[in-house]
Image (cartoon, rainbow, N blue to C red; front, side, top):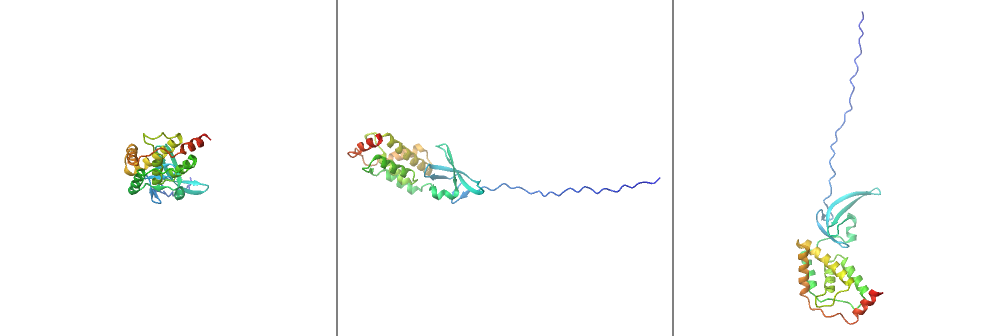
Length: 212
């Protein structure tokens, strides 16, 4: 009886898989001198905080964005890193500049004898300029003490907008509450010269303009 020899089958070779360690992408923490968690001033919205620097792909191009949170306004803004100079984003004012703004509040109000609509545009431009001294000028010019005639609705709106921008930045610079910053602003305004009634004809110009 002849025995049959079976040919040994070659062992199946398993492919060698190279294990590549995937490292998480390192997120940027600083761009153009601005860091994550830093408070900044964005002229159109005031003081905000940089939450992160994220990367997005738009139309095949990678775009880096500052993610800025405006807590009081409950708003988050994404600003391209390359556009910060264009939009005027800046660091918080130095202490010396804050002091200059507070000194500005103590000065005499400078109210032009022009139609209210034109002055309102000038005030709004100053508020949105992001310039802390220019904003202080608006607060000074629109401030009314208890002994003075009440503000019109539009005046009050601009005054409160300027006061809000100024107090937020002072609060962030001095690391105090906004309430404390407002008290400091009001104390500076109280040291200014007493203000008399509006120049003759100015009230009429405002009423005519608002009614038009």
